[in-house]
Length: 164
Image (cartoon, rainbow, N blue to C red; front, side):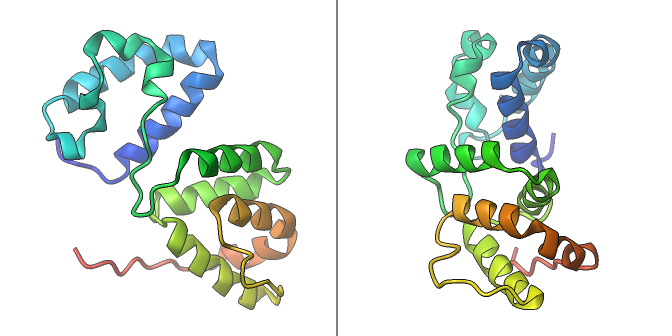
């Protein structure tokens, strides 16, 4: 199996679903076990699932401990604040768009800050210098301003120019 950059965000989303729905856990557990077995051969740096005991794969709480390895790792408090922001969002379109930016375009917190600042300028929305300091702040800003932002997101082209 080749390393796929979208695999980790997909597994992270599956883990979120497992922790919120017992029905999802029942359906997805066998598939995750197969995925774990397939990934088990990857080097540890590419495979965070190697750190778990194979007997623990059935315990969703143990799987939920995986840390997101974006360039700027988010500490526990920031993750809690982000989860609260996601749960309080009223514009599901904004939430889906932000998740797409992170999973499909691999935008980490620093890039989301830049993107949000540029988007705010395009939309004519005034922002404070600390507006996008944290990921939860970015999510809250998108939620609050989604009605203004959404039309600008339709035709936007995102190009990731990272050196490989």
